[in-house]
Amino acid sequence: MPLLQIQNLTKNFGGLCAVSDLSVTFEGRELMGLIGPNGAGKTTVFNMTSGFYQPSEGSITFNGQNTAGMKPHQVTSLGIARTFQNIRLWHDMTVLDNIRISQHHHLGYSFWDSVLRTRRYSQSEKRITSAAHEILEALDLRRYENELPRNLPYGLQRKVEIARALSVKPRLLLLDEPAAGLNSVDVADLIRLVRWIHKEFDIAIWMIEHQMTVVMSLCTWIKVVDFGSTIAEGTPEEIRNNPQVIKAYLGDENI
Amino acid sequence: MQRLSIPFLLAVLFTALVGMSYYEYMDLYVQSVIMFMGVNIILSTSFNIINGYMGEFACGHAAFMAVGAYVTSVLNVLLFTKDRIFGPPLLDPELALYFFPFTLLAGGFIAALVGALVAIPSFKTRGDYLAIITIAANYIVTSTIINMDSIGGARGFMGMKKIIFAMEDVVYLPWMLIWVLLSTFMTVWIIRRYVSSTYGKGIIAIHQDEVAAEIMSVNTNKMKMVAFMLSSGLAGIAGGLFAHILGYINPGSFGILKSTECLVMVYLGGMGSLSGAVLSAVLFTLLLESLRFIIPWMDQGLHFMSLLPDGYHLSQVWKWVIIPMILVLLMQFRPEGIMGNKELSDIFPRLKRLYSFK
Image (cartoon, rainbow over all chains, first blue to last red; front, side):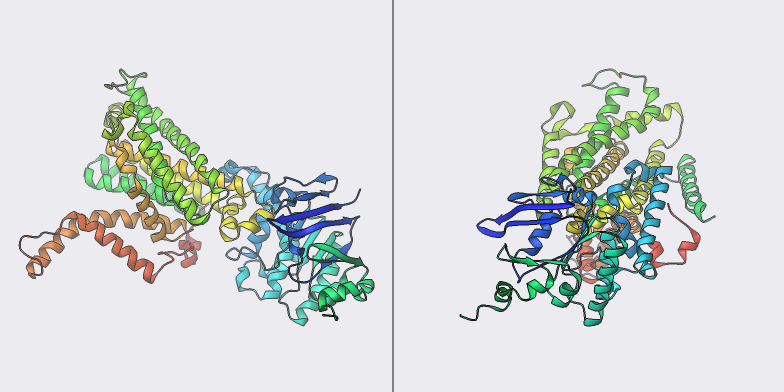
């Protein structure tokens, strides 16, 4: 059974067709890239995969379960976590709280437990906090746990956001332009980080990225979309030399 | 030591206030000011859940107060007093003392149910639109009460004083003051525990980035529902207390002006600060009461300096000029309120050594 199967996915916003007839399959733990010019519909694909938009047509099956009609938090608890193009951390809460709140789907206690401070409350708070410490430790962020994200440099904010996504213990991680706004040193770090996460956490990663160095060095399979439809897919080498891709990115020489 | 300092202080405060009113060191006026302070603390801290921690802009807090006030009063009058409309009491009036907390909670519960109805539109709307919806809800509640003749309609509803007398007949203590103090302590304690748990921090996540909250596994609809129900339930309890302190309620006292008072208290104290909400409720009550004395003094002073014409005297209506003026100045020079979104222990870190409030 494939991990994620997207079949004939289509999304229309009124008369605008943002994504048309897109199909993707993740067998196990691939590291796949999704590229395309601005406005090609890449983020819309991610928004549908994470349950934020409902597809107009087609189906998304994760781990044998159809995600149609599910709320985003339900999709997340199935095992799909994501980061955002423009970092969306909760900026006025500490890094530790950012990680802890992402455990909201398996808190295991109710409102009354939180008011009466029952044993169930203290046990699950302890469990959540130690899980959060573990993930921060793994990503070398433990020393920033009491900082507010807004006070951290941009590269670290990205890393915290990735840590937050990993803390929900996903089986598929969606990275939406992780290298956007990073300098070349941070980009090199990011490439190492993503490769390490892929190996260490043993998860599938799907990333949208504009920086070709990142995509070409990380992904084993790349899908290129333009105006909502797939124009090419293949290994990095095949993509690099595909005339249609070059045309989409650089324009037609006959114009 | 740290853990016991707050309960100890509260116990001292409680005994001192109750003792002073029991031995009549405090007259009824001071007592009533303290009780209104308690009610205002409940109102502002509970409203702070929605407008502060969750960052919504609701404007109809008085509606829930009205529901709580009417449900508690009608229940009590129906059960424990001989009334013109409801007839003889259904239970022995002596039981009023033991049943009062339950009728108060019943009022809170019904108010929470009404709050749940208002929470449903908040799933999709935010900001100005939610403000309009909540103002509409406030009007719906007050005009429903106006049109219910069986509970007095626009003339209002009374008979709650008899409940107090019935309670005092059993054991002579300043019962209303006791209930108000206990409810206030409970409210602040519940809210503190709620918002400091990871469960409750879900609503702060909604405030800071709702989309991220929804995608990073927070069930936003459920959290909004819980927050609205908690907030309106506590407002209902405040309403029940308010009705029994005054002994008389009418729909007019739960209009848009009362909701505005709640808004003023939240924004004065600082959004998302529990100690700020408590502080601003205390200050606001004191300010309202002190203007009762300050305005005649100002009147005399201005006449003494011949700045006012002989025939004209400053009346108490000027209160509603001075308080908005203070609000305007506050918004101009400190828009985040007295405390911002910080707690007392964030501003004075040394306090952390003296107490832990959990």
